[in-house]
Amino acid sequence: MYLTSEKKQEIFEKYGKSNTDTGSPEAQIALFSYRIAHLTEHLKSNHKDYSTERALRMLVGKRRRLLDYLIKVDINRYRAIIKELGIRK
Image 1: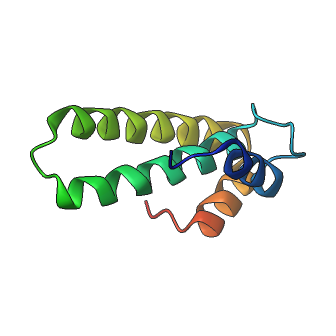
Image 2: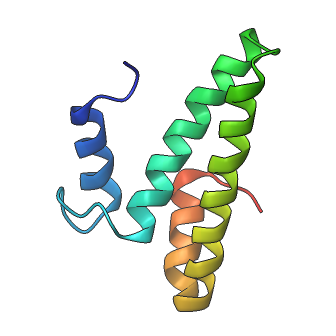
Image 3: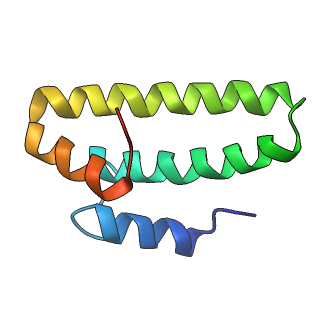
């Protein structure tokens, strides 16, 4: 499995407020970004896997909605997470 519980803990520890903070927008955006990167690599070699392509599009939409929420709430947190993850807009 590509996403172990240790990897999730590491992501939440780095981007969340603590290692048990799974609900903050920054932690969720970081987790979605990790999953998006993995699915993108999968689709490079399996370009006819349409169900994975749909899942990837849904994840990108979820991440976009969270980023839009973060813009409304706190623009500085948004800019920090965009810079840290290397997400372009």
